[in-house]
Length: 374
Figure 1 (cartoon, helix red, strand yellow):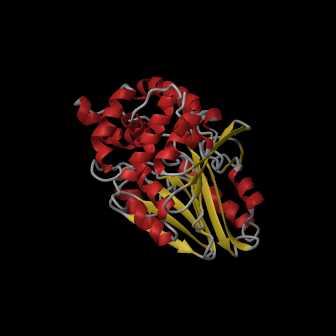
Figure 2 (cartoon, helix red, strand yellow; figure 1 turned 180 degrees about the vertical axis):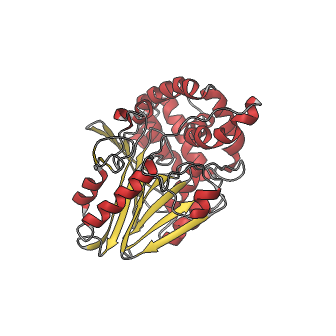
Figure 3 (cartoon, rainbow, N blue to C red; figure 1 turned 90 degrees about the horizontal axis):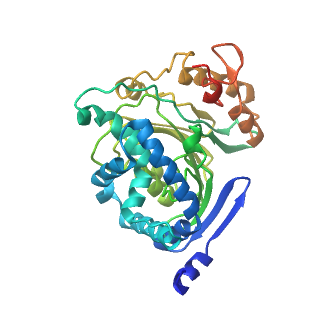
């Protein structure tokens, strides 16, 4: 049973299920917003955690609990108080709903992707005292930003899609509207319940910024120092009102975690940008007339050659090279006609440039690993 005070906090939130999506609206202080989410999405979180615990051992050979210890050792002290308060609220909301949780649990949960995907590949050989065979990493996401003469009305358009394995992707169904007590309200697609940031990375901010990303294929750097990406991107989304402010906040304390090419649209100025963020090197391109796209290819030659392994940039047999070529063809075809409908058509494209015909596979803008003979 909730206390009267807790019930009043939960009553300020909204949660509706629609077509498999959890549409969540939270408001109030950081702690109150966290409590609302934890309480209202407790069942979804519990089921996701069950699967993540099983699949962590199956996928990496180390337990979820072991990775949680590494997350707390590396990153607990790097979390600003306002976000620790929100995470504590999530833990208390889950506990009130019957899913016993702590602040440490929430930190480990939010850190899972960075720790397993970026810290572990750099440290597995040291921990096991022998080099481990690295498996072929599937890359995630296609995205486009367009503005000026590229669009039907000169205004910015931004589109994004995520690819992931079914076991984890089934939980990427939270659309969260966050009304904050400081900074700018925002909407995000959360990758799973009780996430501080959107690991599938699509944001719409009341500041006028729209933001998405695609990961940098083959990125092979990580620093144990610094601030995890899920904290930095949350800070940038909540407090930035310009492209420059966004880049500055996202880059503050950069540790190389979850390295991405960020696509940013500023609806106040009509400008779009692509910010590629490695560890040592970063690159910012911007325009008020044209397009940028993301396909896990790395455009900055310093990041591509010095911080990545086998990015596939110029190889149409690989996912990144094939999608990069197809994006250029699609942009030529739709240039000057880009609107929401055109963005959806481009993101749904399944033409394989290596084979030369329509054939869903990992090489398509809309990747289909599930039917790829590889």
